[in-house]
Image 1 (spheres, rainbow, N blue to C red):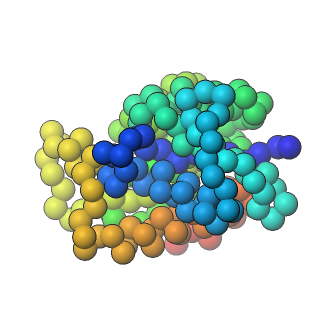
Image 2: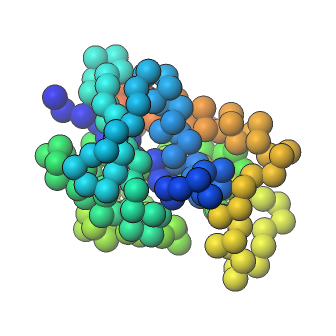
Image 3: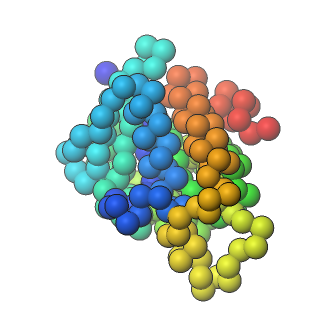
Amino acid sequence: MDYNILVGLGNPGFEYETTRHNVGFHVIDVLCNRLGKSLRPGKGEYLFASGQVSGRGILLVKPMTYMNNSGTAVGDVLLNYESSPDRLAVVFDDLALPLSTIRIRPKGSDGGHNGLRSIIYHLNTNAFPRIRCGIRQEMMPPKNRVVDFVLSPFDEGEKEAVNEMVERAADAATEFATLGIAPTMNKFNR
């Protein structure tokens, strides 16, 4: 079966579970729940679940390589499933977007995101769809504190907005898997 592949970026381990950097993992968790699937080890450093949405094959993936080496796992997935970057959508946290905003793009730069940088490097292309999930606060820390910020948990007052964003990102990922990138952008980039 041909699969559309949805990769959520994050860091494995209990200590990272609730951090801003793990929004992509949360979207994959929501999709697994919706499909009634559980993640299992893949043929590489990733967890995956497969299923169908509207008769189309869908592969849900969480790299276990830690954020900065996400490209290793994504490359393994594409190789193992004989797939191409245009069948892939990467879901990740984005400091450039205000909290709770999502944006869908067909391609682009890494925007300073180390997980994306690793994927672009390993796939040797930036031409793959992405679902960007905003984590920016009004008062952002100085640049030398950004790592601490993305590895910190969401504040109590942010959690409702984050949960809604994760659900919308899961909706967008499902739309991509069934209808493709253009209809997904038209629907969610308002």
